[in-house]
Image (cartoon, rainbow over all chains, first blue to last red; front, side, top):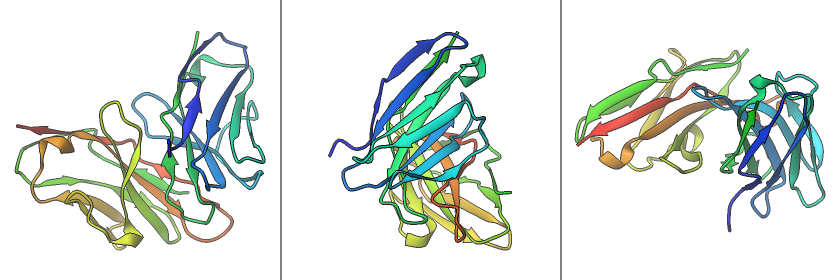
Length: 113
Length: 112
C-alpha cells in the first residue's frame, strides 16, 4: 500500500487566487482529515470528513472548504488566497472511528506570493 | 479549550544518554494522547499512543493526569532517534470525531 497520497507536492499561487489540494486515503480508510502546518508550528486541524459528511471543523475562515468523494478521496479548497495561507497542508486518513490513529500523507507545500 | 504544550523547541543529548521530551496538555475531559515523529525527509508517523501502552523503538510515555503530562522517554538515545517529535491530543467522547491537537514540536538531536 502506498499510504496516503497527496497532490500536488508543491504549488505557487498569487494572492486572491483559488487552490485545490487533493488527497487519497489508505485503502479501507473512510475518514480524511486536513491540517495546516505553518513553518515552526505543529499541524493545526482544519477539517475531518467521514463517509462524505463533515465531522469536524477547526478555527479556519469560510474561505476554506472541503469535500469527500464516494471513493473516500478528498479535496481541500481555499479561496481568495492570502500570504498567510502559505503553509504545508497535510492530509491524514483513518478507519473512521473515534480516536483512531491517523496516518499522514507527505503534504502539499503551498506558497502564496 | 484543548491545548498541547511542548516547552522545548530544541533538545540535544549525547548518544547513550537518557532522553525526555516534555508534553503538557490542557483539556477538561479525558483525552487520548499520541506521540508522532518526523524523520528527515519523511512524513509524520505514529510513534506511540497512550491507550496501546506499547514501547516503540525503546520509547515509552506515561500519562500523568494529575500533572496533565505525557512525557516521552528513552533510557539510551541513539543517533537514529534524531528527528522532530510532536505530541498530540484527541478528545474522547462527544461528537468531536477524530480531531487531533498538536504541540509545536521538539527537534531532538542525538550527538555521536
